Image (tube, rainbow, N blue to C red; front, side, top):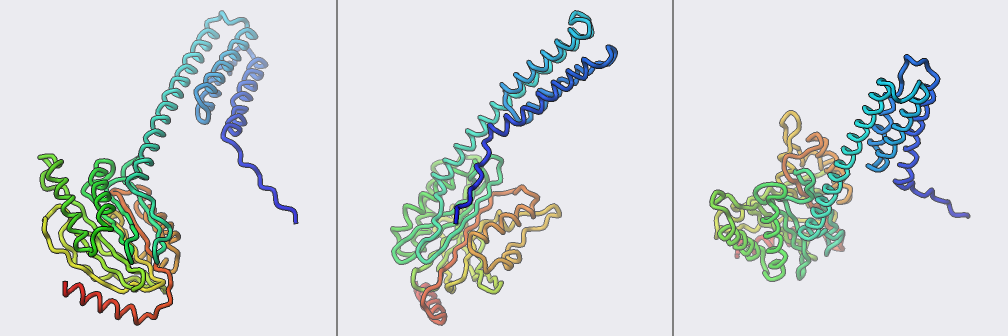
Length: 386
């Protein structure tokens, strides 16, 4: 069987060149028709349409070239209708020249703005990759997919954050939300991410890990917090630990909303959670360790409050639990795609706050389900003993 040939994609410059035929043809048609009409009919002023059309799809040079061509056509029309020295043709030529120059200047300013905007986007994307490392598609027993939607225009990152790391015998995941949104909150988000990545491998328990994060946020606030914002710098965080072998999840929350547990068959449950105050609010606060069953085939959905607090035009919050119940059997990637489309449709295309989500899907293993319940009871007893 002969292989099927695929059509080569059309290059942008080829499309632009093809579109340039439109203003050129328009100039020719207007010139020819004007030269054939009576002297009291003037179609020359319509030539300004040609550079105006060119501005919509081409750059400064093409707009200037079409403007010069239109001006030449206007001069030719003037010669045909009795010479360019008449007051009528002089006014038409000067008017067309001025309008063409204005269009060229506007095109140059637009290209400069586009270049600046592209540079801002490049810097934002580079900062996003430095601070928010892309999560792997597979880590330990988990398949992962994530979604980040920044509230500020042209921002790729903001006050929401997440990270995941593979520790000895378990996967640890952090999702958090620092006070503020968009670019001003990046400093606090970077601090919390750095502290997590540095400490996640050093501490044997989530309680010790969250204490370290608390100390980092408190120290940062004491050293760098402006006087007018004293006591207002804080961050919510949810730390999750998923063992490789035991089908359970350990988690501790610092003022962060609880995750959703999605099970096959459109079942959505909210694990019991006992949150402590946000990081940076009350140093030395006790952190409760919550344990629940996380069986193979289940998906754990972590999110920030920017998701559930998103409002539609009538002021109604986004019903995350109700919406995801339709997609419990989908892959993490498909789940993120559905939520993104549905959330943006709910808010009319623009979020009022940063939003982040992580879907953690435990891949099947050869273990009986009752072992998961035994592991939960054992882990809970251990946590209470501690």
